[in-house]
Image (cartoon, rainbow, N blue to C red):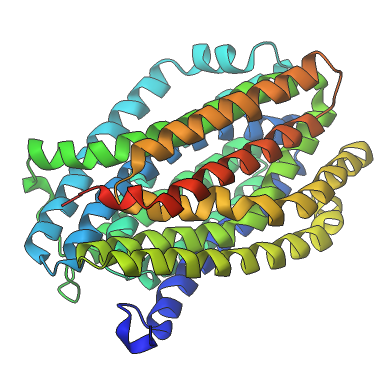
Length: 447
């Protein structure tokens, strides 16, 4: 096909992908800076933040999946040029994600201590105390990050990725500035880091909801207090969002379960694994941005009835993601030692971290893309149950069971986490590759 025959020209793709990639990279970089700031407070602080964030990410990923479910519907309606139904679905996304996030926050606050004790077991007293403080403030931020995710997904479904990027840039600056002041000036430790995060998420939610009121876009949402539940539309949103939410939640639960094994290896191993997780997220986040953009592209293609275009763009953007993964892995590998030094890590933890990053740099470009990027396109087509089942099986069978076996029965250190991870990525890539080429994912009907 010639470029003008495609729904998205190369320029349109650049305008769509560059902001979302930049936003994802910036968020990950700021997360690294945030961790480096906290690490200077001490090993107990960084261990606490790492442990609590494993719970926080579980919740936030579930919200993100619900928002993505609504965005799939919005993007397909945009592809049909049906702006009325796109607006209706956007309002219901905001309604249901607000209701769920407020309920989750209430539960987390009510059962904060039992939850922390159940998940982390017997950790050192100073780590548990810091975890309790950090979890309190971050749980308060759940409704705000959920609303931001919903609003940002609605914007991306229209092809507008620049707006969420600008909000994210400002929010990250506020977060890091708040960290610097509260940690280093007022010496508030993990409480300072958590309060800065809460403030930045409140800012994100307020701004993105305000932007949705503007007339300059196909989807305009006003009079938020007048939104009433529409059972049929909410069911449709949940039918897409819940499988993705279960998939993401199972993934994070697996990480939590793995963390319980890593925590038995001591503070040095916990700190090494925490930093390695951050660096691994950093070297994959740009490619995840490609996947997020792919959902909008595939959704609009299928809404317009252009199945051949959906196939074309999954192939094209998978190649782009592979190039991005190679470049980002090499960059993170080069920065790994300077980052561990700037983070003030103990030499033993830093050496352990660098060893794991080296193996990630070798393996990830080989197996990661096929295991993750095409799946974004399949979800945008409504093939969410297959993605959920596949991801849950490979995660528990390989990432979790293999990791726990190596740590608890073979005496491996934290490198066992990544052996399990590599196996998961490889098997998942084979299964999703077969599914993509079968074209069965094109048989789903979303709107």
